[in-house]
Length: 119
Image (tube, rainbow, N blue to C red):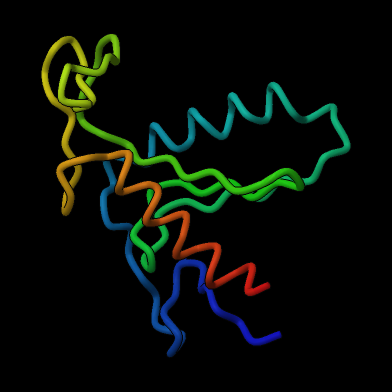
């Protein structure tokens, strides 16, 4: 099977620097928490951080499915307002390209499904 995703390198083998270094600590903390919960089970999972295509912050592949995590610069209790906008302590959470982070992660998940699960 041809390689479709490159870790820390582009298709020409050139090294890619992380897009957002400020996300490294959050990614590491999530990895530590996942290890704490899952290290004793036999289920295999793969965690990829800082993908470039699609530009996802954190991707989890497991035997049960695919998960996409986008890290945002917001803290507080997450709620939905009347328009369906995600809010943290009543401040709207937006994404880089799209206004809706839910649509952003769904688009990333669909792109990853097409690249990694072609059937």
